[in-house]
Image (tube, rainbow, N blue to C red):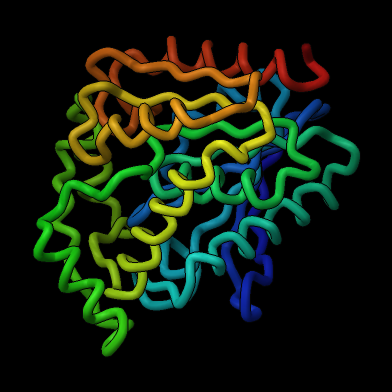
Length: 278
C-alpha cells in the first residue's frame, strides 16, 4: 500500500491538507469526509480494511481542522465544504482515472456527503453516511440560539462545543487517543454553527431527492448525534437502493468502537456490491 500527502485548492483558493492510501491495483475510490473537530488522520482503524479490499482512500482535513489552515471550526458558508469535497473528488479521479467513486462521510462529514450527493449525484457510484449529523447536536439550546444571533453580528466568534470525549466510543483506548490528540478541537464559530443547522434542515427537506445508492448506519446508543435524525432522513429517501443499519449499543464513532470488525465486514460487502468488485 502506498501512502501520500498532498495539498489541494479548495473554495476561495484555500490550500487544504489531503492524504491518500492506495493499494497496488485499486478497483474503486472511497472519498472520506471527516467530522467536526477532528481530522482525516483519525481513521487509522477504517483505512486498512478498505485498502486490503482493494479500495483507494482519499481524504482531506476540512478548512479550520487538522493540518489545513483557517480559524478552528469556522466556515463562511456550508457551500465551502461542498466545494472542497468536489476538489478532493476531482483530485482523486485525476490520480486514479476511470474508477467508481463512493463518498463516505462521518458525523458532520455524513451531512456533507448526503447534501453533496443530493445536489451533485453525477459520477457517484454510492454514498455511505456514518452517524450523520441530521439533527441538532446534543448541546445547550441556549448555545444554539446564541450562535444564530452571533452569526449575523460576529460570525467568527468562537464557541466551545463542550464535546465529551467519552461519548465517541466505549473503547477507553480510543477515548484516550481522542482526548490527547493535539489536532482535535472543540471550537465552533457562530457562523459555522448556524450554517450547519441550516444544512441539517435542508438535508431533511430534500432527502426524497437522493438518487444514488445509500448505506446509512448509526449506533443506537449515540449520545452525541441522535439516531432519530437518521431515522427521519431514511424514512424520506425514495432511492430504491438504500440500506439503514442500526448498530446496537454503539456510540458515535462505530469505526472506533468495540465490535468494529463486524462493521468493517458489512461496509466492505456493501462496497463490493456497488463497485466493479461485485
